[in-house]
Length: 462
Image (tube, rainbow, N blue to C red; front, side):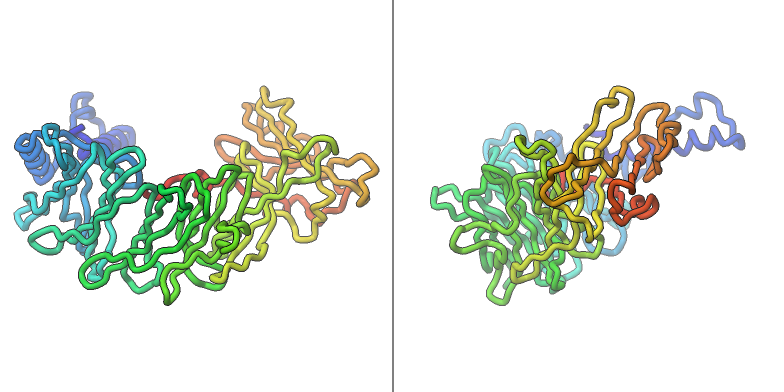
């Protein structure tokens, strides 16, 4: 555990040594090539200081469960001057019956040595998450710690570290998750805490904490959708009228709903939640393989509204969907920005032209050659509205992963859409079946890879 701080330096130095040795310009003996790098003295001193503190406390390194800051030793620039002057170390005192968790903060002095300046204590057996944000607007960052008491109960604390003592700005219990954002865009970060009702009254809520009179105060709260099982994730993004909002994806019994929160003069407001039903029905969906994202790269988040395609077999419901992407404004009014077909298992999607008659289109998978590294999605078209005739395939998109993928992508009629070191994507377009308004080049422009994003249901800060 104690070598985590040094791992990056070791790997970097080793990589540099290997690069030099293989360049043809520098030749070293085997002993020199594999010798560990000499670490800067300040890091040796920091490690020694940490070990002394751990011995005095009878502590071990603590686990951080979620978020982007999960290392047990973190080097930080807390005052915004570009220098990492602070080290945060996360510990658990094994003999302590109360408040066993510790966050020890060490600051580097002018002599380059680290000295402990603060020690924060908390309940539980692990730290759920940690974040560093400017909550007061003074240019320095505060530390936000979520102490995990049990599987569904946490204490969220925030501390100002600019003085000789660590001032606690916030301490509140919560059972879901939280997100940090400057929702009113005043230069200070606020915290939005999500709570699931535990009384049976059905009042799930988002609590809005902002810095007022020296502390973080819950200045307002907004209801979340009734009957939610869990807050799957949350994300900050712009709405179609330029306002900033928090998109909260909540899991329901039969799918997903997205609540959209904005900051009005009167406080936090859920602009998509219908008062009569208690839910944001305009964002409800049962198909959950994709999530909210800026699908068309215009700076506004879209929410997916999946619609099943016409089934090839009228007696069996379709398992294929088109995604109608909805943008919402700060009044909760939605509009469709584009329509896509997502082949999630093959990691691609297609942006449909506006002129397509989606009611006369069907799709089906063809994985008959998957053992040879070829998977496909076939699109069909009915030439008449009544669908009396058999549908005909007009477009097939292939994902090729076999060793012969380059050769198979060049088979007659196939147009390459995208290729990288792991897969080649190509298509066959039969314009004699239906003039869909696309040629090979236009099809390639509308073909996109699915990137790892919010759709993967990643918890923002539990």
